[in-house]
Image 1 (cartoon, rainbow over the protein chains, first blue to last red):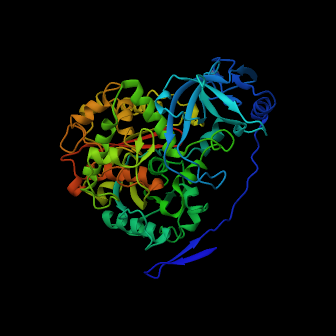
Image 2 (cartoon, each protein chain N blue to C red; image 1 turned 90 degrees about the vertical axis):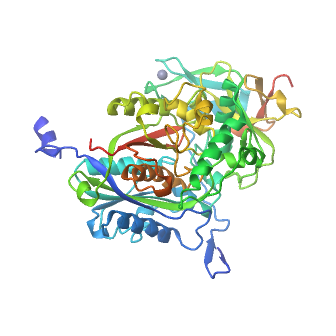
Image 3 (cartoon, chains in turn green, yellow; image 1 turned 120 degrees about the vertical axis):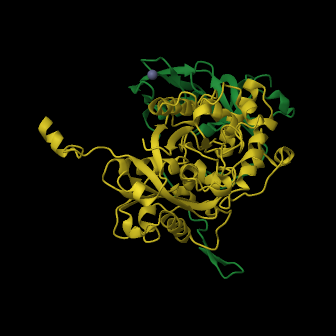
Length: 160
Length: 399
Ligand SMILES: [Zn+2]
């Protein structure tokens, strides 16, 4: 707790570095997805038995059909850019409490074999104009993987 | 079995849904840091102004609905914590919160409560003190901790990808979006409650610091402290309280996805679906002709192009033409955001309710320098969560 006073004699109370840690349950399908990602660098989607749509990330229920899904299907670690941006301002990363280094790329990708999009960082090439909607990309994995989306370092242009 | 169910139903015995109107509203003078007051003191300002505008006292109010986005201030018991600042002492108090749509959820929930016949004069309050935390970091905690948060680029990055996809699809220019900022900033200069009351030029927008391509600093709404209070009354009291109540003609709400990646970037699907329902229910066949004014939740400039297409004001890709032609300017065929909109003030939990309050002011002919002459039908929109939409249609004629 840090207290601060301004020139008008008004006080402010800072919460300081207090943190509230959580332990989130990933669930049945998400755990299978993360296991495959960690052990085999393999993406999986989950298919709706009714509309046949393949969802990545995996989840139990197809929203439009409100139907339970149980069929995991392999999905490529390659795909194309649906949209992207290059971040040029710094904000606090609530996961780490740190300011993310800029510039960095953020992309929405359609992996081959999936019917929904997947988001992650994208490596920004020196010539930024080489990033465009429709460009082919692939996932780059970390050496040490622990079962989280951060097992993927980022995506990069396939041409690289 | 059937008999039991009937006994429990409050609508049996002649009780019917009631028509509902807005009879008064109050706002704070929104700013980037209301360091002179704490949040409760700020809320009271809006409540007092709303009661004054309707010439009511707190004793006339039979219930209170309040909301904000809890994680911006880290206070998770807002309904209790805000008594007595709201006037809620020994009254029923309910909290509603749905992210960015909180303000319009408050309005629609308040409407439902009064329409039900259980409340006759309801005070609805939305507020936020965005200066009290890091807005982008706090917004990120609204998203899924496993699939979204680790890589999500905040609200600005999330909107930037929508903008980028739109520019690429139609080969539009950043200038088109900047024209929306120029309009809303010009309108905001007429609004004494707006946080931003200075006009800007297209050149200033495009030379402001880049945030996330293609967005610049001035493409985005500001970070604002503010509160808004609105009084909803049933048909038996509304006309006794004021000469010109703003009647609720209809509402529509759409949530469609939890993950931001489930949204396809070819228009705001929830807006398209909500507009179809609302316009069908209320007999609007040509919104551009039939609506007199829109108060739109535009968190950033590109929404002022993409979402007016989704609303059905023009064909897909034609948003810029409508904006450049001045159709949506004050004096145009269908002015959008006479108040300046969220680009001129965005206290997030209040923002949607401010849209509804401003739309009601237009119908009540109380919008002063920002009044659209003879406005009879006004639309207010809400945006939030994972590309969700709320719509509220207000009118001068009792439905
Ligand atoms: Zn399905």
